[in-house]
Amino acid sequence: MVVLDVSVVNVALPSVQADLGLAQRSASWVAMAYSLGFAGVLLVGARLADVFGTVRVLAWGVGAFTLASTVGGLATEGWLLIAARGAQGLSAAVVSPATFTLLTTTHAEGPNRTRAIATWTAVSLAGGGLGNVASGVLTDLLSWRATLLINLPIGVCVVTAATALRNRDQGHRSSRRIDLAGAGLATAAFTSGIYALSSLSEPTAGALPVVIGVVSGVLFAVLALQQRHTPNKLVPDSLSRDRLIVLGNAATGLTAACFQVGLWYFLTYRMQDQLGYSPIQAGLAFLPLTATMLSVNLIITPRLMDRHSPQVLIAAGAVLTVPALLWLAVRDHGPFALTILVPSVAIGLGGALINTPLATLVTTGVRAEDAGAASGLMNTSKQFGGAIGLAAASTVAALAGTDHVAFAFMALAVLAAAAVAVVATRRPVPPRSATTPATRPRAH
Image (cartoon, rainbow, N blue to C red; front, side, top):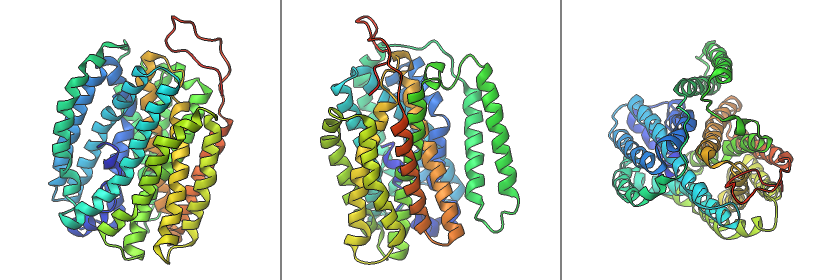
């Protein structure tokens, strides 16, 4: 439900624009508000699971997510819909790391955890694709409002089912407090930076993007200073000083510039505005991409990870993904097979080889008491990477007057992600003892 809502409004955006009278840049904020709310408090949301218990936080988070979805589905003004999407994101920031933390604290490192992470990643990737399919079907048959209101019955079921997991709350608890000041500074800094980036292409913006960009820089400086002196850091020193985790999260953010929001957003507008697809046709056109990602991630990627290092698989994924994105950058008309199907399948194959190995890189060897923080850091990288990627790609597309450069931008982001991941290594450490549940493993 959380990942589906990253993309569930994408195919519906043209209908939202027409119904609520939004400009296209404002409509893009319907998508970005979710990612910004999600990313802004993920590190705090993850810490809530460490402090108060994963399942308790999961249930409350899903309840708040469901309420925000209902408000958004009933919104009659654009600002209210954008605000509801932001509230959805804040709730998702609690729910998503809680689900991942359950996996990493339940499954020991090795093949079992690899399969668990592969399943979680497959659901995440498929959720994005299924969001586009559901968006098209619900918008065509009912209304764009149904894309949000559908969360009401689902959320009730999830909250009810979460009670069956209450025994999972008996694990490690962190004694650290929640750094609300740091979370507020991080959210404000990233939000203002993304707003400034997305406003650059507006001819009437004047000097406003520059002013807001300077404000963002100041906020980042204040955040860095605040984090140096607070005893309750957003990212524990054990994670921020680990080269593999830092580079792995950088690669995750770069990958998210394509896979988190951007790819679905630009393909949606291309199919409806340029190729003349209806919402339901556009939604169904995402099925090959979704099915490829899901099947490869569940069946093939875990087996390959038993034989190859994550860096090798990430590089192989980039070899498949980058040419397909460049194909989309140069060809925007013709039969479905050439314009959508073939590049979608290639991107699905590449994305399935990239995302699970990245998730493994940034969580392997993390101490149990930092599992929530590691999960939050990974999800933060994905959400901010997706929001920044969409803002940057939208800006370059508007300045160039074509979406071709947006796909080229995403290709460069994936290529950069592969390069960063390939050089990411961890120094070998002594083998862990039988009494130490989670210390650093040897490098691949």
